[in-house]
Length: 524
Image (cartoon, rainbow, N blue to C red; front, side, top):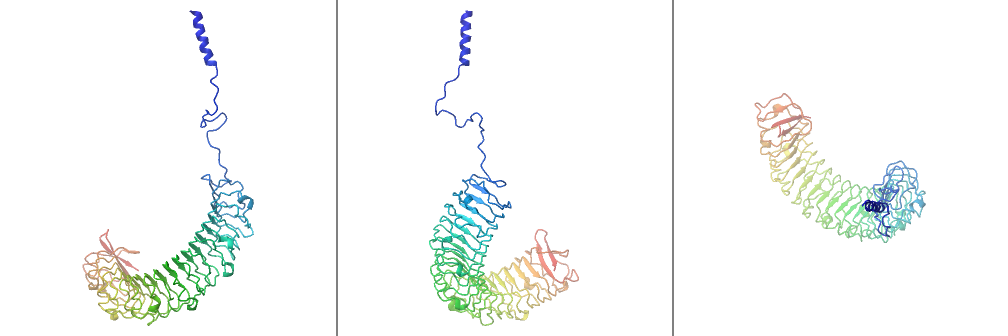
């Protein structure tokens, strides 16, 4: 028995000491760390002080770098070097980064000398390049065919080349504003082969005429703040998808446009020709036009024939022209049936234009010479919601008591800066805002305010009112007035016991505070 027990223990000991089965190829657990190896992935290469939140992203924004980083991973697709002090881009470093899709060099000191002609040749996948706010005097001669967005704004660029933006079938947006481009620096084939460009910004340059051969795919074209005096015939004949055209702050005259200039723009919705030298409304405006900005020109008369094609117009801005007493004949705007807003600020008009479109919602006429408001002057526009007649020459004696009767939709009425001595009669009961500051008001009586239970703001500052001139019950129906601006301690109870609570209120703005259930008086 003793010998058999000893043999069993020896057998067990041998089993424990024998090595396990030899490993079979392909059976190792790849997830299990081998001897001497860490279970953590190796750290990604990232330039000093930069951040690399993803394997394809390197962010070196705002580090005051003066030298291009030399430790950027080849896997980078998005590289930001904006807000640094870089003066040049080394070709050997850029050529390694063939997978780049976004390169942001905004706000550096890069000159054209520091940007080799072949700098972008190897970046065959680049889609977005931002080189705005640098010191380029000429654009790169070649940008990759894969490009979608190119921003070279706010440099000193005087010249671009055929392959800077040409032959880029995916290019959608080009920003060249705030440079020194003249027509001589913009080749006629600048966008040949780039038939998808939708946005082109050339504002704040030195162009003297609208460049020819612009992409037919354009939807937004910015040419404001140039020296443009002429749009050559046919220059906009192919841009049938153009929706927004900005030509303000140029030197356009009537002779620089013709009847065909805008006639082919069958998608145009917004046209800004303000701050030019036009004396008439341009001819050939398209039916699709919704907003026409002609402010700050020298227009003396609006001719009905010039607006015949623009019957879809919604906003017509004619402020600061020279229309005078005869520049807007009665009924000249009547064909614009959908007109919503008409701006006529500062034109020397001596009366409200007659026979305006019936659906007009906002009429803005401040700083004119309007001295009379007759019973039927506003009868043609019953849908008006905003009427601004501030700083004209209206007197109470020449404002008819039925002048506002038909304006049942009116919500805002501005009569500030006139010569009114009393509140107008017949105010629409739906008014929310009534501005009467800087008149000659000497009394307030309850009758003109009767029924104005929706009034939220009443401005009476800078008049000649004293509390003794405020009739009993004047405030009784103004239940919706809200607190406006600075309030002082004067408080008028809901039902004042006498017409005089305080000895003098030189300039007042009366407001209602619903949460305090009392009216407040502001002394201006």
